[in-house]
Image (tube, rainbow over all chains, first blue to last red):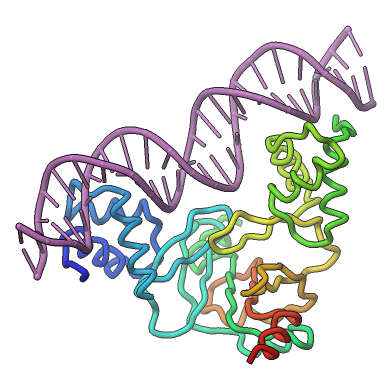
Amino acid sequence: MVRNTQQGNAIRQALKKAGRPLSAQEILNLAQKKVPGLGIATVYRNLKSLHEESSVVAVELPGQPPRWELAPAKHHHHFLCNICDKLYEINACPEDLQHLLPAGYTLEEHDLLLRGLCDNCSRNKKQSE
Amino acid sequence: MVRNTQQGNAIRQALKKAGRPLSAQEILNLAQKKVPGLGIATVYRNLKSLHEESSVVAVELPGQPPRWELAPAKHHHHFLCNICDKLYEINACPEDLQHLLPAGYTLEEHDLLLRGLCDNCSRNKKQSE
DNA sequence: GTCGTTGCAAAGCGTTTGCAGCCTA
DNA sequence: TAGGCTGCAAACGCTTTGCAACGAC
């Protein structure tokens, strides 16, 4: 049976409060404010369990460790800002990707990562030009 | 200046002959047939150089080490088979992704990974049903 | 009291780096 | 011959695991 521990709660709360995908290290830092002795191994073990029960989702980024977010209600994608490195949730989807595939292929899932400049960084860049 | 070494050639040839993205380990295995003493560090150093000069591209996969391919002539995406784990090149692109973004965001690049069953595995699965 | 969970430290894996020797230009 | 490139082994960063102690039920 699954037990209700301080550590597990702190980890889930950190993800919930952040509202954006966090790295294991970020989760550790946040959760340690609630449970000072918390170790990184416990973060990984909890993430693994949560992932197995589909409560959290891993977001993979090129050349970086994955970030984790609470399982979203609806299908969505992400936008990574090339300047501030923040990862945003995009509530839209290109749909109809099956037609990109050659005949015979069956599409089951898809991952889309958009990259560029977020609103903030776009604005800052324009000002400095 | 850049020198023309056996090792570098073996690595480039392995990528060229394979015609699909390879992991560093796969490259090592293939290139060692030409240059037996070849070390993994040399594979990584060559990949790094080739990547810097944009001759090769890294393809990132969730939960796996990246695979490398010779820089493709044209923009494309990939399809990962959920059964045989082979990675295929898809010469198509959803285009017009900017409209998925909120106002103010600037789209610079995008990565799309399609997953499902390749032609072969789709067929095998149907037969066994 | 049981036994799932934890913290620590050690190990694992993919990747990078320091260094002395090698080999291309 | 100079100095870029190599192989080896050690180091690295992130993640997982073994183990004894802890604590939720």
